[in-house]
Length: 119
Image (cartoon, rainbow, N blue to C red; front, side, top):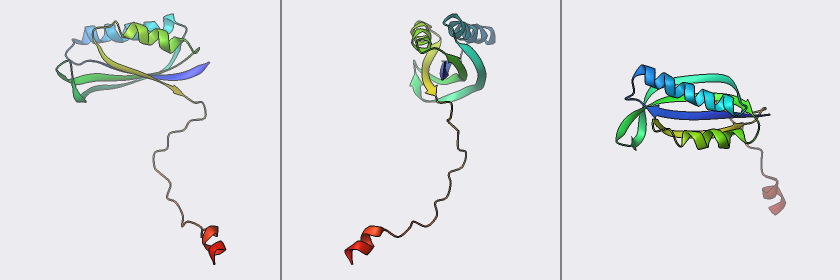
């Protein structure tokens, strides 16, 4: 089983009921093709980096799920047909992947051995 994260942007001008229905469809696609949803991270209404279909805002949602290798392709093929889905992206998450919140400060670099050999 592989772990995936699906990012979906849905039209922000939808009514609440329509938005929830669209999200249920997305979750249904994952379930139908053998995926198990682990986490749903709803970011809400955000400004888009550039206008999509003359819209400046979208509803962002990220879904983490586990499934076999063919599931993301099947889910994405169904999302392409949804009129209210503006954009989507699926990435594969590695099991040992950790998010680093703060970059580590590098210590002083060691003296280069090539400089010593040139002398």
